[in-house]
Structure formats: structure tokens, C-alpha cells
Length: 297
Image (tube, rainbow, N blue to C red; front, side, top):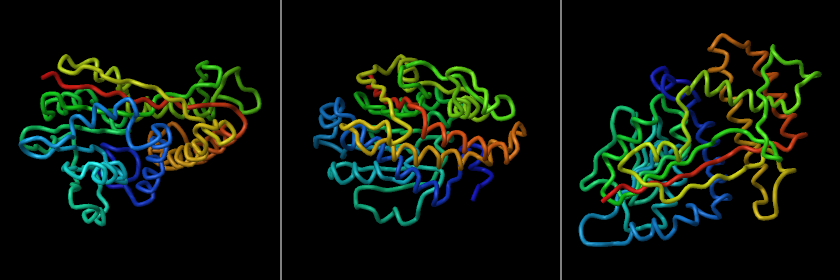
């Protein structure tokens, strides 16, 4: 069910079905990283989470969704205090682990403070849903302790297997029987999603680089297949998970797309069928980005 005040901020549902989709989405990052966090960040994270004099390391997971990352972090770093925040929180999460808590709030109205600042602020697939992602980074910077980490991860844009950029296709504009070379219905969906819902989309690396007080210590882009037929041996199962959460994302986007008045529900549903067929027949990928910035001491 949509909630009016939430829908103004987050264009997708915030119900149980969406939380389940986000839980599956967490599996993509686990497959890409081979674990909870990017391998290149293990030493950086571990050094900051080590127990020292003073309060325990504080970690904030913004847009925690299904809470998978927050709960796993709590199990790995028992000495840390983890706080997950989101627009909607499953009540059962309040009993997940003794060192993890959850709070329902709108992060655009301010970050929950913590004494001494956060050791890590983590936001996965969040900045692409914000009207002003630059303001988010500024607010996160203010709540980080010196030397603290801001970890941003998000989905970028579609790309063909040969690394060429797809031509966006739209229902009512392009004929499915006479498509231009390199045309992609999925690229059209993402293009319209950004223009209609989140016009100030920025890559994770550019957001961190734009802040003078943050220095990028790691950036990486992964190409995620949109169908199991394009899986590799190293990341078997990635295409199936990606296909599942992406088609779920499309179905969750029906209502906001129709609300723009530019497409009928019938057109949007047909659009999704064309996307599904495209995934089954063409080698298209999605770029998934992660960037980590450290706050100057």
C-alpha cells in the first residue's frame, strides 16, 4: 500500500512485498562482493571497527530496507552499535540482535545524532531516490566522525555486452516490429524513471568527489547480467537474482509511471512484457556502482 507522505519521497511501495524484493536485491551485492562488503574495503572497515577506548563504533544504515546489511554487520562486528533507518520499518526487526536497532524516519529531515559521530554511514540504492543527493552527502558528512567512512552504492544505467550504450525505446513511440539498431525497452524505462522521478541522479563517485571534505578511497563498477543466460562461472546465479528484482522493480513502478499521465496502464504493462522478452533474448547488463569516501581528520 502507498502512503501519501512516503510516496512524495520514495516513489515505490513500502509494503512487505517491496521489503522482500529488497532482501533479494541484497543478494546481488553479496554475489558481487563475495560477501557483505566490497573486498577492497575489508581492511579499511576492519581498522575503523576495532575496539578502542571510548564509545563503541557507531554505524548508520540509511534506507535499510529489508535490514539484511544492518543485521549481518551486527553479527560480524559484535562490538559495534548498528542503527538502521528507513521510511518504513518491519516491527519484527526490533528483535533482530542486541547490537542493532531500527528507527522509522525520513532522513531528508535530518540524521539521528550519535555522540562522537558515526564510524560508518552506509546508503545502498538510496541516493538515486533523493531529490537532492548533494544535500544528503553534506548532512552525512556532518554526522561522520573524523576518519569515518561514507559508503554509497547504487544502480547506474543499462549497457550492452559490447559496452555500447542502448538507445531508449518507449511504448507509443517505437514500433516493436521495427526497432532502431541498439534499441532497448529497458533503457527507455530507466531513462523515463530518472526524468520523471529523480531528475538529479548522480553517480556515487561524483557525489563523494563533489564534497571537499571527503576523499574517495575506493570506487568500482560491476556489470550485472539481466538474465541467467549471461551468467559467468564466477558469479553463477547473478542473472536470475537480477532478473527477479528488476522485473519486480518494474511492476512496483506501474503506479508512478501511470500517474505521470504520459502512459496508460495498458502501455506500461506491455512495456514490462517487452522488457522481459528483451532480457530473455539480448545480452543487456546493468551497471552497479559503489564508492567509499573518508572524512578528513
